[in-house]
Length: 74
Image 1 (cartoon, rainbow, N blue to C red):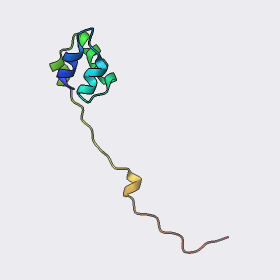
Image 2 (image 1 turned 135 degrees about the horizontal axis):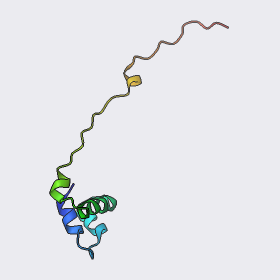
Image 3 (image 1 turned 90 degrees about the vertical axis):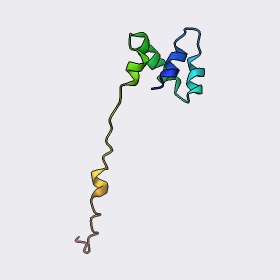
Protein backbone atom coordinates (compact mmCIF):
# COMPACT_ATOMS: atom_id res chain seq x y z
CA UNK A 1 0.00 0.00 0.00
CA UNK A 2 1.19 3.48 -0.76
CA UNK A 3 0.82 5.56 2.38
CA UNK A 4 1.29 8.71 0.34
CA UNK A 5 -1.70 7.88 -1.87
CA UNK A 6 -3.99 7.41 1.14
CA UNK A 7 -2.76 10.60 2.74
CA UNK A 8 -3.23 12.59 -0.49
CA UNK A 9 -6.69 11.11 -1.11
CA UNK A 10 -7.96 11.75 2.43
CA UNK A 11 -9.25 15.34 2.12
CA UNK A 12 -12.93 15.32 1.06
CA UNK A 13 -12.45 17.59 -1.98
CA UNK A 14 -9.61 15.49 -3.46
CA UNK A 15 -10.08 13.50 -6.67
CA UNK A 16 -9.22 9.93 -5.73
CA UNK A 17 -8.93 9.05 -9.43
CA UNK A 18 -6.24 11.70 -9.95
CA UNK A 19 -4.32 10.55 -6.87
CA UNK A 20 -4.53 6.95 -8.08
CA UNK A 21 -3.23 7.90 -11.53
CA UNK A 22 -0.28 9.80 -10.05
CA UNK A 23 0.67 6.74 -8.02
CA UNK A 24 -0.13 4.31 -10.85
CA UNK A 25 -2.81 2.60 -8.76
CA UNK A 26 -6.38 1.55 -9.39
CA UNK A 27 -8.84 4.14 -8.05
CA UNK A 28 -10.99 1.45 -6.41
CA UNK A 29 -7.96 0.31 -4.42
CA UNK A 30 -7.31 3.84 -3.17
CA UNK A 31 -11.02 4.23 -2.27
CA UNK A 32 -10.81 1.00 -0.29
CA UNK A 33 -7.65 2.07 1.53
CA UNK A 34 -9.18 5.47 2.26
CA UNK A 35 -12.31 3.81 3.70
CA UNK A 36 -10.17 1.59 5.95
CA UNK A 37 -8.15 4.63 7.01
CA UNK A 38 -11.35 6.49 7.95
CA UNK A 39 -12.41 3.52 10.12
CA UNK A 40 -9.56 4.21 12.52
CA UNK A 41 -6.66 2.46 10.83
CA UNK A 42 -3.58 4.56 10.28
CA UNK A 43 -1.76 4.42 6.92
CA UNK A 44 1.31 3.01 8.68
CA UNK A 45 -0.76 0.25 10.28
CA UNK A 46 -2.40 -0.61 6.95
CA UNK A 47 1.01 -0.61 5.25
CA UNK A 48 2.24 -3.22 7.71
CA UNK A 49 -0.25 -5.78 6.39
CA UNK A 50 1.42 -8.23 4.04
CA UNK A 51 0.17 -11.20 2.11
CA UNK A 52 2.08 -14.38 1.58
CA UNK A 53 1.49 -16.37 -1.59
CA UNK A 54 2.84 -19.66 -2.78
CA UNK A 55 2.84 -20.59 -6.45
CA UNK A 56 2.03 -24.24 -6.88
CA UNK A 57 2.41 -25.77 -10.33
CA UNK A 58 -0.49 -27.72 -11.77
CA UNK A 59 0.07 -31.38 -10.83
CA UNK A 60 -1.24 -32.57 -14.22
CA UNK A 61 1.43 -30.52 -15.98
CA UNK A 62 4.16 -32.31 -14.02
CA UNK A 63 3.06 -35.83 -14.98
CA UNK A 64 4.72 -37.36 -18.05
CA UNK A 65 2.40 -37.73 -21.02
CA UNK A 66 0.63 -41.05 -21.30
CA UNK A 67 1.91 -43.15 -24.20
CA UNK A 68 -0.47 -43.59 -27.11
CA UNK A 69 -1.93 -47.11 -27.39
CA UNK A 70 -0.11 -49.26 -29.91
CA UNK A 71 -3.10 -51.46 -30.71
CA UNK A 72 -6.77 -50.76 -31.12
CA UNK A 73 -9.39 -53.38 -30.25
CA UNK A 74 -12.84 -53.24 -31.77
